[in-house]
Amino acid sequence: MTTTPGNASSGLPGKPPVVDLAAWQAARDELLVREKAHTREGDAIAAARRRLPMVELDGTVEVVGPDGPVPFLDLFQGRDELVVYQHMWYDGAPHQGQCEGCTTTAWHLKDAAYLNARGVSFAILTTGPWDEVAAYLEFMGYTQPWYSVRGVEAPVGGEMGYIACFLREGDRVFLTYRTTGRGNEPVNGSLSLLDMTPYGRGEAWEDKPEGRPEGHSPCWYWRSDADGNANWGPTSRPVPQWTRPGATPVETLGRHGHHH
Image (tube, rainbow, N blue to C red; front, side, top):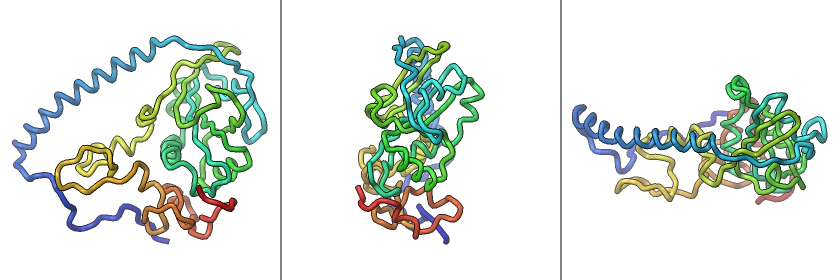
C-alpha cells in the first residue's frame, strides 16, 4: 500500500510576496525581537510554574494496566517525578473513532527516554475500560505505559485531555501542575513546526494573510483513509497509524459496532 497523506498540490493560493534577501532579513530581524520577548516570557512563566504550591493525594489509589490493578505510586517506577497524559476515551467506539487531539498528543509521546534521564517517569491514563484500551494500544502500535483510571477521582482520574505533573516523597504523592486546553501543545512538535510554515496548521481560527486557504476545524486532518483523504468514516484511522508496518484498510472496522 502506498500512503501519501498531505501530498503536494500545484498552484497553492496566497503565497508570500517575493523579495530580495536583504528585505527578507530585515523583516525576519523585526520578528525576531518579538520571538525573543516571547521566549523570555515563557522562561519566566516556567520559573513561576516551578514555584507553584502542591496538593497531596492518595498514592495507593488503584489504576488498571496490563498486569491488572496497581497503585498509582507504581507509575513513578521508583523515580521522584511523574508526568501523565490524560487521554480522552469514547466507550465502544471503533479504534479510528477515538479522540483526534489526544491521538496526536499520545503519538508524540511514544518514548520517555529523555524524561527518564532527568528522573521523570511518564504514563498515559484514560477512562476507557482496560479491555478496550488494550485492543486500541495493539491497533496503534503503542508501547508507552497506559493505564485505565475508570472510576478514579481527579486528579488521577476525572476529566481527561490534559497533562498533569506529580512529585513523590517516599510513599507520599503530590500534584504539582496541570494544564488547561491549549496547555498540551508543547508536547506536539508537529504543531510547533506547522506554526513556522507559511500555511500554518490549516485550522479555521488562525489569523491568515489575505488569499490563504480557508482553515478547517482543529484536528480535521488527523484521521484519514489509506489515500490520505481526511474523513471519519469506517475506512479511516488516526493518520499515524497508517505508518505502522502491515497496516491495511481491512483492519479499520475495529472491534466495536458503532462510531462516534
